[in-house]
Image 1 (tube, rainbow, N blue to C red):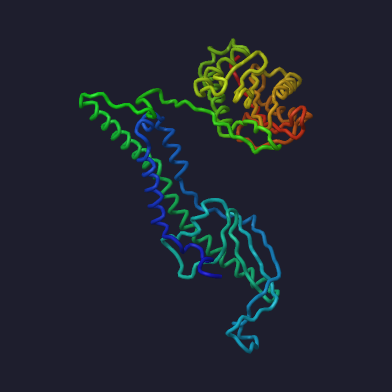
Image 2: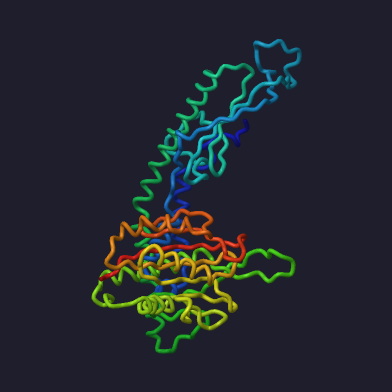
Amino acid sequence: MSRDDYLFIEYDLRRVIESHEKAMNDEIDGIEGNRLLNTKFDELVTYFKDKYLLQAPKLFEDKISVDQNEAKIDVSRDPNRFIFDRDEPFYITGTKIDFYIPYEGDKDLFKCQPSTYSLNPPKGTVTETDVILTYHTTDHNGDSIKGEFQRTFDQIKSYLKNIESSCVEFNNQVEDKIRARINSRQEKVKNDQGMVASLGFPMRKRDDALQTFVVPDIKRKITPRMPEPTMPAAEPEPILDITEYEHILEIVTSMVTVMERSPRAFVDMGEEDLRTHFLVQLNGQYEGQATGETFNSNGKTDILIRVNNKNIFIAECKFWKGEEYFKSAIDQLLGYTSWRDTKTAILLFNRNKDTSAVLSQISKIVEAHPNYARREEYASETGFRFVMRHNNDREREATLTVLVFDIPA
């Protein structure tokens, strides 16, 4: 192995963390002033915290795997072999053994030297998913290879323990540092604007500047992600980016929290009233595109997004009235979908029913549907995500998220 194969020697960890913090501060200091003042403080903190937290690599010892292949091995330096010219490589056929150690965390931290280190660091190759330790042998002494591997593995774990300690120290302080930096920057922007105001002249307006101290909820515009053309000369169909899809579902979920806090205001609402409640909030977050009216209802579809006169998000609001009614809601929703990768949702309101019993039935009902393709992971106690096939084209698929809400009775 060359020097490039040594781990934990390329950078000094302390300096890397200092540089990491400087990059964070530079990004905070680089936010345009009006945007800084008009964005929710806690949202800024969350953004910077999520971006700059350090994730020390964690090894998965219980998932280690091994691979072996024949390989040409240079034995010219083996004193137990009779070789006429040791200045030239002398190859024989041996065995190469690779140990794959899965990990998660920041790959670049394997390049960093912690405060405590060895003059003989471990060697290995780091990919995006594994640390690979490679050994060559000309015999079949498995115990010897296993012993070498264990020594190197223990050494790597020791390095990572020291790195983790430094990362934890940084992570424990980072939120306080972010808050202090944003506060300081906001105060400077306010003082700058106050000083200019005191001059007695109107401030020159910029066409691209946000107004100061407007309502902090920034309008979002949907930027559809265009898929690759599937046929020659075909016009690509717009689809909803997954980030915007998740944001829409977050808005819907947050509205249910409002219901829970003010139950009497919603106790007599029917499906249409609840739909209107969601539409008001969604229209407050999204601006219309192409049609001039992003969210609309026409008596068939409860909630939809249109881009270039084509639907890219469709949702149905339904009360839970049993298995057959839920099946009909799925059929109704799939009847509206007509474009590849359409994002859809069913907002299921449960009133006067055992919510746990309702939740236990959702997957069974959807997976029994003839259009069901597969289930996807979805981190929610009362939500489910599925992929469904289109009615008239089995090659076309739509994402269906089912959200179950327990609402006031």
